[in-house]
Length: 75
Image 1 (cartoon, helix red, strand yellow):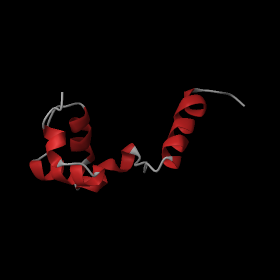
Image 2 (cartoon, one colour):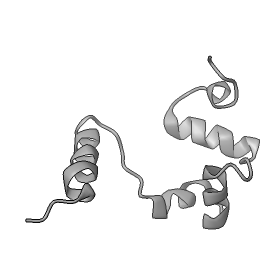
Image 3 (cartoon, helix red, strand yellow):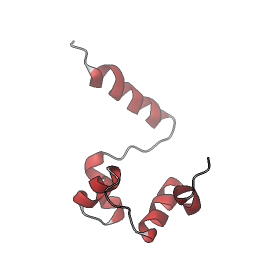
Image 4 (cartoon, helix red, strand yellow):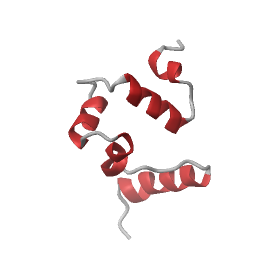
C-alpha cells in the first residue's frame, strides 16, 4: 500500500472528527446549504465578498452559535 497525504493524514483526521460527532460536509456540497452559487461560496473563502446578513445567520444556526460570534471578534 502506498502512503500519501490522503491516506496518512486527511482520511484518519476525518474519521476521528466523525467519531467525535462532527458532520462532514464536502466542499463540493457546501454551497447547497446556503442557496448560493458555487462561485459565490468560493469567493467567501478567499474573502473577495462577504455573505449577506441572512446568510451569516444561517451559518450561525448551522454551527449552533450566536450570530454575533461570526461578526464580532472575541479577541
